[in-house]
Image (cartoon, rainbow, N blue to C red; front, side, top):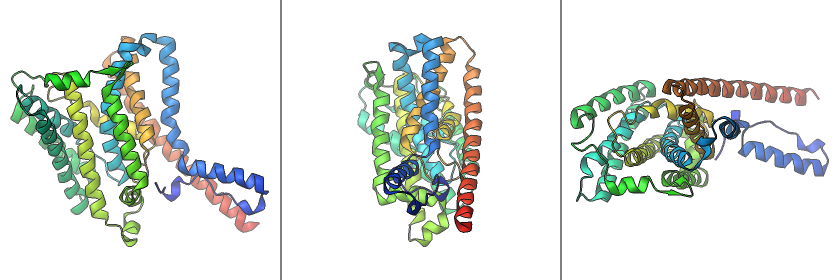
Length: 356
């Protein structure tokens, strides 16, 4: 996927170095172009947490715990991938909890015994897509502020869900048994929800890097006006992104309802802060531009494993939220500092070349 100018690590003047060194430097330049340092932060954080967890909370690294962590990490990955797409086009989606809850509510309310489950699942996904497209029209077509729009639609949808279904979505308040059995299945302690998220992430990554429309997502976010000048149908790209994000949110809602078994209207609440935090840790450009799916997976596992370690340690649940907030601030600050240093280094390099 093409990267914005700020994401280019450094410029190297190859003409003045020997051929063998030139080849090595070209390889390093290409590696840093394709894998910016900020994408490695999520993997480094996860590796450090695994070491800490193994040393101080070894039970968090055992079979049953790994199954729970991978299940919740898979669900969070799907929702965070949707948030990543919105951030890539320069937006921010605060209505994620509503779309997760709407999809979960449809699964619980209409997935009664004898119901056609595939139809119910499609309905849940379609409603989430339609809801996200409403955000897209208000933000991309009418050019309203994404923060205000999604915060407003969050309130409207959350209130509407409560009036429509009540707190427990239905009389029984339970997801269909077939979906619950599926969502709780594990292979070698890795939950199927995580495997689903991996497949979706791979497909999304291929779409963003191998298709013209996918490559244009980051370009639109980096410079909307320049993309339009180059002939990119900006509105179509942005509406497509909102639709795809809604599909990802809806998928997360279906899976979380199925895994929890008896969800309520607050089921989506944790995903508002968590999805933004995951995107920040994963190095997604917060003001539009490129993003990568692999660090999103790592960041999702990091947050869920952190929650598990905190729970096993007997600490209050609020500690996890505090860590999420700190992680978000640190990640955003680190990206800003990295960009400032990178810009300064490139300017210094240009100055040296012009004076030599």
